[in-house]
Amino acid sequence: MNWYPPFWGAGIRVSEVNPSCTRYVTTMKLRWWNKNIYGTHFGGSLYAMCDPFYCFIVFNHLGKDYIVWDKAASIEFVSPGKSKVTAIFEADEQTLSDFKNKVDLEGKATIDFTTTVRGIDGKIVAKVQKTVYARRKKRSK
Image (cartoon, rainbow, N blue to C red):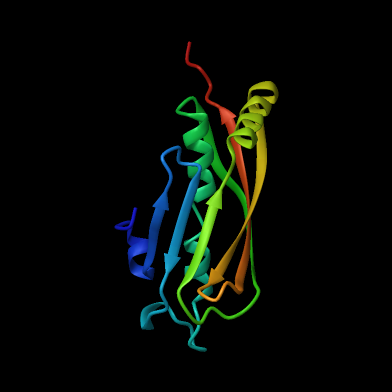
């Protein structure tokens, strides 16, 4: 994933993935090519480092018999990112199992996740909310 062009171009690194794919950690150093005019992290890059991971977590848990998409997202910029930033994306097995059961019962469902992007000093740079949609694939006859 570190060679994915949008990540590579922005300097985004996936620094950790646990074996069950329920936890991802991304980092991004502040470089001349990902700064805005104020010398802080460009907002688009901050969002890009958060974009796909909750979908990955849900997709990996549900499996190939399900369609998984981002349904909605928002980012609140809390303070300027002036250093390396880190974001952690995590979902516990019980939450994912409950979501799978809901999708199986109702045919489709959404789930909300929240994470923060933090500087090396621990200060919150941004808060990100994601809504992930899932449904079972239609079976062919």
